[in-house]
Amino acid sequence: MEINKVLTNQHIKELSELAHKIWNEYFISIISQEQIDYMLKNLQSEEPITKQINDDGYEYFLVKDGDKNIGYFAIQQRQGHLFLSKLYIDKSQRGQGIGKEALEFIKTKAKEYNLPKIQLTCNKFNLPSLAVYERWGFDIVKSAEADIGGGFVMDDYILEKAV
Image (cartoon, rainbow, N blue to C red; front, side):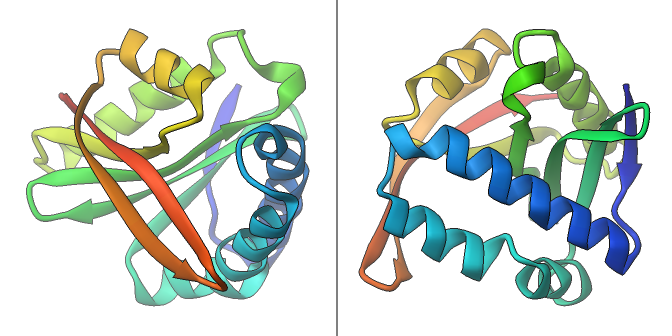
């Protein structure tokens, strides 16, 4: 397994394609196809990813197995914590410790940036991911609802873990 920072337009294109594959497979049991399509278009297609990197301080990383992209994550330095914006692993690779390895990389980044904790949001109905985050030592600290436009709302828990 290898973790590579997303630096080029080609990386962004590959990441967006992977996001579309993973989101359409994973989230259909949690949110509607309409919301998946809306969120992919507005958050995980090439243009918004480029904006997040160039304007909003996000760092994206592709997780690779040889030359195959098998996952991705995004982080952002915030006041007092490192925000883990996304962590997605391809269905064929889940349960093999890849997410845990990615988390170790993220913890190293938090320490590099002198940030004492990692914070993330997770859909309240995403029970498999919530169970994984809790197993990794994250605690639910509060609930948050966010209107993301298009008539859609993200209904999440905010989780934190000290590094």
